[in-house]
Length: 375
Image (cartoon, rainbow, N blue to C red):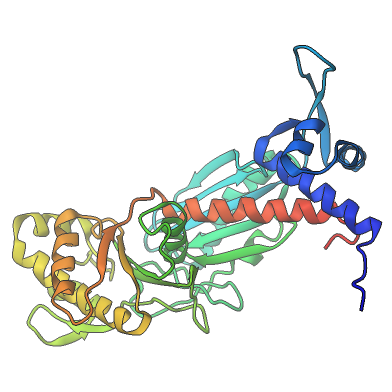
């Protein structure tokens, strides 16, 4: 059977997509530059640019090439294509920003939020941050990507309350909170999953498709990446390691979260790790570092047995301490399946990865809007 030839409409849509993606990558280009970069003929590119300009997706910047020969017009994405909202919800508050399709930050804000904040306080902080940014954003927010320092239900996007979690905001529903401020989808995931993606994209796990990222800070968390993708599990709760049993300070088995209570390293009236006290104890007493390393290594040994990673990445305030990394590395080296250990390197990893996803999703929305069926 002779394969069907693509329709003229399909060819036009593909050409327009190439033009849009070229302008997303290079900001401003002449039609000749787009043709050279895409390998598509100049007349075909010129027709596509005219159609995109007529539909309001591309504009003539008014700038012209200089030098010998015929001058060319520079084209760019239209300024009113909207933005994407990026938000991080943590004990430190709600940090939010809007980004455009070029990856530029259009606006940025922060709303404080205490460690004992409940669902309603978190909702108010997220609403305030979104309102500040979307009122000022050109074209409005077309989608949102949210990072949350709590488990996230994979099916609903709601935050999940687990026993002994140090930062509890109930069953907060970020998608519902942001609905008045965002015209499109709202993507929500746990902050540790976003951090793992950031390390895979541009950190110590770049080029490593199978790794485990463990967050050791006020809270405890883990992300498992296999074949280059973070695995979220049936409910989205994969990597919640606080209640995994390990070796306690006295040599008996106990949940990882209880190790810090046994060592007196919890914040008052909270299950959160007292990072300052922990760092002071680790610096003053090598025995404390070894007990913590033994407990963490017990959890990681289980992850190694189940996921078979090539690398373990240590993130979080005290996970990146050189003494802790060395102690954990030493503990794992004594096991039956040693795995390389590295400290996380990406700053603000949850926002970095969420921002990258937001830009990618916004670009897809813009490209789809150029297609005849909008799909």
